[in-house]
Length: 241
Image 1 (tube, one colour):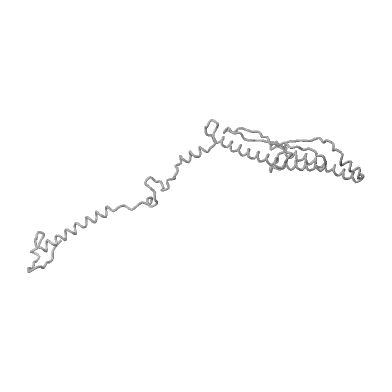
Image 2 (cartoon, one colour; image 1 turned 30 degrees about the vertical axis):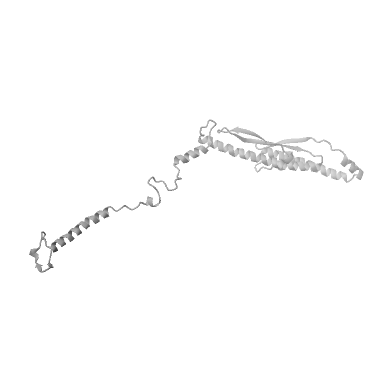
């Protein structure tokens, strides 16, 4: 830094009287100011260089250094796979089933559901004329038994009167066709019930026609006479014939 002019006290100083080693109060003051300015520059630079780095985008979201979120409930792929394996069906020896075996188990489960639904529909519609359902089972790869077929016995019998026979035949036909997917055996039983109903209606017409020519006493005697024993028919309505 060069000094151009300084005036002070009772003396005046020219350019030649002052220099870098001048000990006058003015020069000493100027040297002190220059030293202060020089020391301030590096300190500012150092302070700027040591400023803390801004937080990363990951830190703003609340994630810690490990990459896990704040909830702490995240599951690893291995944990998810372990839960899936625990719920999957297993063989009787505890070993997991392969893909083909798992597919077979699913098909058997679906078949079992269909068979039981089918037989339940027969029983509900058959009422007192229907018996208990029986099932045919198959063991799956998981060691469990699954129903793959079933049948419900039903009594197709003539009643004491044509009217009773007609009612029985209608009940049997309704029971045979109750499922949404009646089998061939179901349709055969329904056809037999329809034939019995037709015969009973013919009988009823004959009785009504003959009664027109009977006297009141003959009608009373016919009504009180015991009905002849009629052979009873039976059959099974099956899920799969």
